[in-house]
Length: 393
Image (cartoon, rainbow, N blue to C red; front, side, top):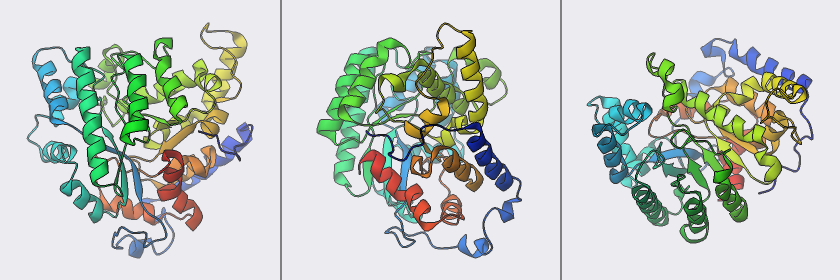
């Protein structure tokens, strides 16, 4: 996968500051003033598929689950083998009688008519589907994890073949076994028609910058496909202060932990080793684009001072890697100022639309994205052509 031809060789602090000023100026506006005059009328428009607004809507971070996956989570919770994050996340979604939990679980388990009806109702033309977090990565029985991952991949491939113009797949991996995962990446690309893989951040507290996971990256480069690093609840080693305050999940913990994961990979030199590799993250970049000035400054200060043995000089700055090797979706962040800021910092070719179905299923958010004050060409990139390019649809 080639980096953009028009990526700038460097991103100066002045450039970052200019983008920051644009984002902050927009963010200071009251909610009713975030879009141009006439938004109130636009926000009531009918949502249709088929490109009636000049673009198709391709949702790029959409989740499904399998019953056997959820059953293993529940068994691990019952037997006291689940980490604190799984108890918090799936102890809620798989057992709570609340309307939110029951609706989400029902939608996760559907890869047919209900999902298609929900897509039609919100004007979503195509969905990139992946097994919901944390996948099989927390499972302690490796054979069971590989079996459930393979079954999920086979099911997803069958559903994508059943609805070839609506569903596209990203494979799931039993990251605990890197060599098996590399083979599954190749099977997904060559036999199942998948467009990449999704990994749900840490695997039992281990991160992909560990050299033992290198076969996964080598396989991705060999098949020329992206990896999507999706959040998981933080590992037990960092979750305690978040869990006690209700901040361990999507509200905060997801983004903090996943942003750190991506930053670990960047600073260990993954893109120097694999220059064509593309890593995707959701939720507007898990905060990294907005911290970019300080990340770059302190990373370079740390390298110069040789403060950390692990932190070696890189060929590019963190900002430059974000513009050549990182892709961002707006999953769960239907907020125009954040999207525009990210486009300014990373480039409009690197920011894509996502809904985050079924965890965030809001027709009003789709209308808000339709109504962004953005050129038609840029909006089409956001909703459609960036996804077509990077997922090779």
